[in-house]
Amino acid sequence: MPKYRLGRLRGGYVAVYYDESGARHRNSLGTDSKVAAQAAVDDLNKREESAPGQTVRKLWDSYRQEKAGHRIAESMLTTWKALEPTFGDRVAESIGDETVHAYIKWRRQPTEAIAGLPGIPGKPAYPNGRSDGTIWTELNHLRIVMEWAKKRNRIQLAPYIPMPPKPAPRDRWLSRSDVQLLIDNATSEHVRLFIILAITTGGRKEALLTLTWEQIDFVRGIIHLDDQQSTQKRKGRASVPMNKSVRVALVEARKAALSKYVIEWNGAPVKSVKRSLAKTAEKARLEDVTAHVFRHSAARWQAEAGIPMSKIAQYLGHSDSRITEKVYARFAPGHMQDAADVLDIGFAEVQAIG
Image 1 (cartoon, rainbow, N blue to C red):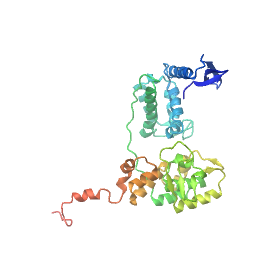
Image 2: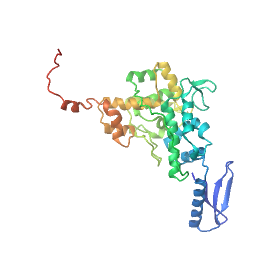
Image 3: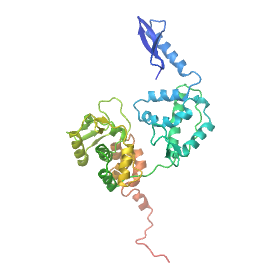
Image 4: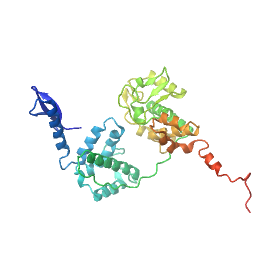
């Protein structure tokens, strides 16, 4: 977000900005021409943003402000808690391999919990250290911000960020009996409703936790995972039809609703279900149950039932069905069977060897 904004004062144009304490300042631009004033403000912002010594913290905050409302801006709140102690006050262009490798080594070691992140401060939160997948995500966010800063001419050269190996994605999915176990062992009503919505809509957790009753169309039987009133459409948020199970759950939840949010706790929106899901999974004696596993499982169930990839893509809110096909086509009945049949060499039955 630019530091300076165009304003008016006593008939003239001024550059308006707020200092760190929140106090407003208005500097005269010495012109009553709006075009000239806009050019002056643009020049002030350009000089401010290209000033030498840009810290990672300043660039990080600017990037998040520009991406406000996007999924990455929210996830960067978590990754920043890990990155800030090492990189926050560093001049962006001064970052080198030594710092990044030291960061990777630190994150791989058993560490105490970081304030605001899972775990109890003062106690080992991760006895085996953080996974390379987590570290990769953190450093990738740093790399994205550095590349953005270079494109915006905030820095002259984006530092090279060496990355740990990116692990292959885990193919964790839930069977129908797994899901039923989780529903039966849900530690609270809002977790139970989240599980039902997650598996029946294939929605992302952010979409489900911000879902309001205005987005539930009981008459037409449709759940709008994206806010229909918003001009900003978000990634992976489709409008999906209700099935019988989710309709029953929603009707019951509507009767007890205390707020506009579908998933609530004591009348307030639920910010995270991470711990609640973990407790529910522990009670159900299941491992590796995350919010995203339900979305993956929903798509796999659809693929195994022979639903066309184009329909699964629409259901998941994918903009390109090739993304869906790349991940889920292998689960479809008879996947590549025709390709295998072309290579049949004509044996009518299995022949004994020897």
